[in-house]
Length: 75
Image (cartoon, rainbow, N blue to C red):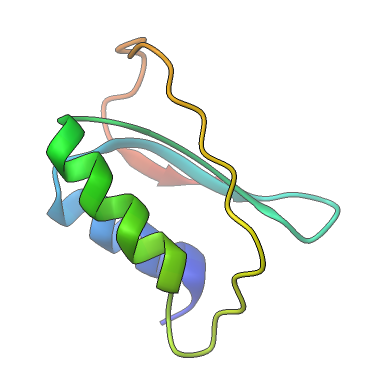
């Protein structure tokens, strides 16, 4: 399973909504909303990724939930 598909799977398993998308510079942006405990689990998983992932850096920004997402999507 590729990174974005794995992220989507984990987010759905944890009941999170939002999106994941590749950026032009090769980075990946993830926006997720849900229960804080599940967001923490999600972040811990993202720090490791899949066996083929290369995670160089993670930047986390906590913001208030907007409620604009109904599901978790790959963009």
